[in-house]
Image (cartoon, helix red, strand yellow):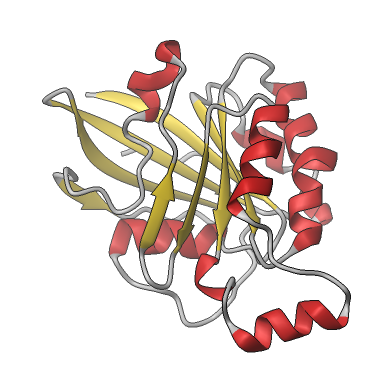
Length: 204
């Protein structure tokens, strides 16, 4: 069975782990635990053929800047995540995350992923941002950044409500691989959940 390696990067606490756990187990974690290195894997059908989609969760904290790139070799696609209610995490997409992955894997495509969209219209969240003269990131703003950074596409989702939205993939060379990178896909054949607390790859 062919494998597609997908590595997820982004600031800490933007919902990367929640996204992957919700996707692979249909459960939303109740507590936030900073990730060091986790693996998740699902079997997806692409063109009638089964593929193993390996999802590699990474830690966004600066303490792991040297450790994190160890998971980058042989990556087929990156998911660069930010929270739509965290302007600083959005800013770090262009200031830190895209420069980092393009430095280590200059030819690897990436998607820009906006998380926590269930909070975009949450009154208390909006009020908190307003006190700092900030507001949630709009889809239009994120799509513009995706174009500027040459991301394959912009998608956004809520791991809590399992709602997703995405734009069409227009790049033919990577479309077949990215076709499997969907959140809560109806074509998922079976699921596997793997966990590793070290920076070593878990094989299945």
